Length: 228
Image 1: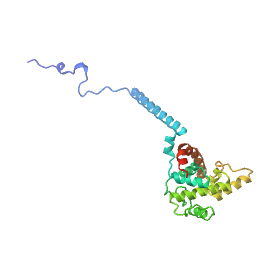
Image 2 (image 1 turned 45 degrees about the vertical axis):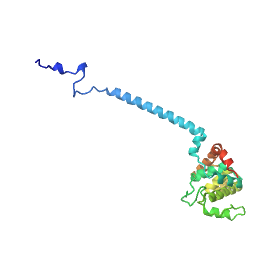
Image 3 (image 1 turned 90 degrees about the horizontal axis):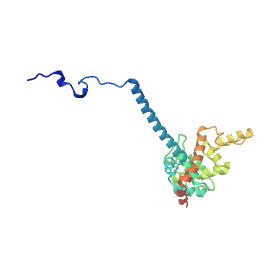
Image 4 (image 1 turned 180 degrees about the vertical axis):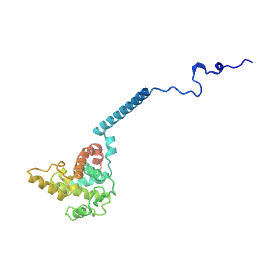
């Protein structure tokens, strides 16, 4: 019987022997490949971010509904009608104050959808043009919206403009009166929200005013149909 030789058992095609180390790519080639992948990922993320930014700026209705919800539209429309307010303004205040969470409570004791203090509701209840329901419980959406819209109407009548009323709604009438007086002492009118010293109040006024046209554009038909 012929004896085997080493050549008889050598792998065909010049393949490496079992157990032999694989030939590795040079380190520079690996770095280039990783850099290329990173650039591709960044380009995809950049395109996605640019697309999102365009959608966010244009705020189409389907997208606006994700950020600006609407509930209790019948109550909002009815109370806005009763108090001579734009229902989109009422919806914008509710969304900014509580995000339409009826059980929302602040650390200062503000309650419900429109974040009212109980003493504010009691003050409104003592007025001749008081809302129809009693001022409690403020956690009830219908009660809260009735008193919140009445309070907003009171502040607009008192201060003359929606921006000033919103500043008083969030920052308090006493503070707003002080800010108006300080501006007058400088021979100026109070610029809202620019001259408001409270960061929270400046943000509140800006967010509400920005949200009003979005609510009008996104839910105008629903709010109109809900009018009594």
